[in-house]
Image (cartoon, rainbow over all chains, first blue to last red; front, top):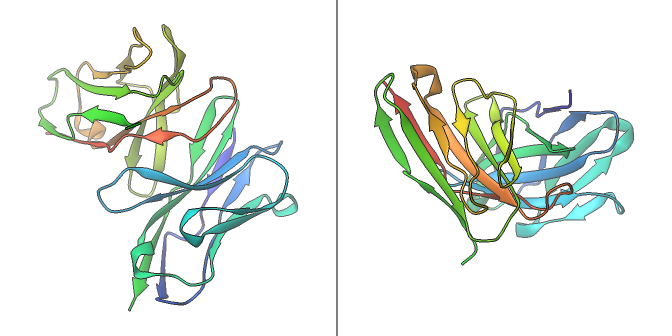
Length: 111
Length: 114
């Protein structure tokens, strides 16, 4: 069965610093890959997705992610974090009607 | 406005008292699903539906029922809730069954079973 691993439960960065959130998946073929963000008390909002083609995908709010097939990874990045980016981030994998989420990474932003 | 709505948003109940959480989408999506979110576990799929009268189990279906009598509605039913079903529940829909686009999530229902 496919699985998604987000190795970092909690990350703290200073405002203005760069950010990278890690995501690894376990699946034979290349699934559809997603990053979602959940602000406190809110539902999930899609940041970006990868289906095929260019392995560097741009999303909303200045986020990007890079798909690396050899590493089965889909890491999320942002060059300069804003205080409003504090939230929980979920990586997700979809294939054949099976949608799986990672456990999430909580991002704290220091002033 | 295109959206997925859930009701109620918050619910406190007691063990064994049947409850239903409603989910409705106004985007004419074929595919709908229910998830529960628990700390450290992320979101886990409970049930999904590819179209009217077509439902299937996700990862954690035990203790839950669903129905899909209309395209827009996908209620989650807990016939006899237990404390281990205390969780945050999300309904989601996406436009095309069999392929995949963005999933739209409802605002969540926080359920506490005493």
